[in-house]
Length: 134
Image 1 (cartoon, one colour):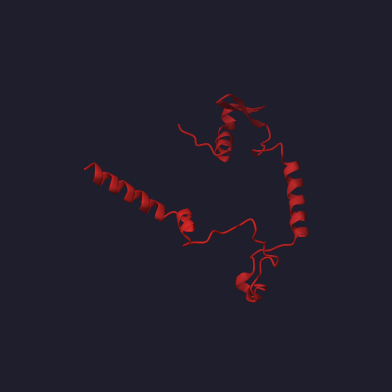
Image 2 (cartoon, one colour):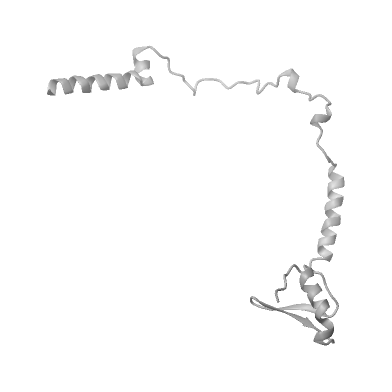
């Protein structure tokens, strides 16, 4: 039994070494590649002649393309609008504003009675995106 295990083990080692490239190189079946001595390609990448110019086809046009000067002027206008409106996130109403303390919010109204302001208050909160449950 031990003799058969030795034969099976040595056969396994031989088969494992047969798959190794180093073993194949030692036996002369495969040549090793010397990467350090090979000279780099001096020509660089070559572009096939049919890929150098794209045909003038509307399929290849970018929709809504613009020049950099047009883009820069548009960005300058947007920056000016953002700078002007930087303090305002919500629409402003005369005499009304939202008070806040943590998660609690309330409406501060100046100079009017509660009965006269109910419809305006409901419109205000709906305009801010809140739903009103009664």
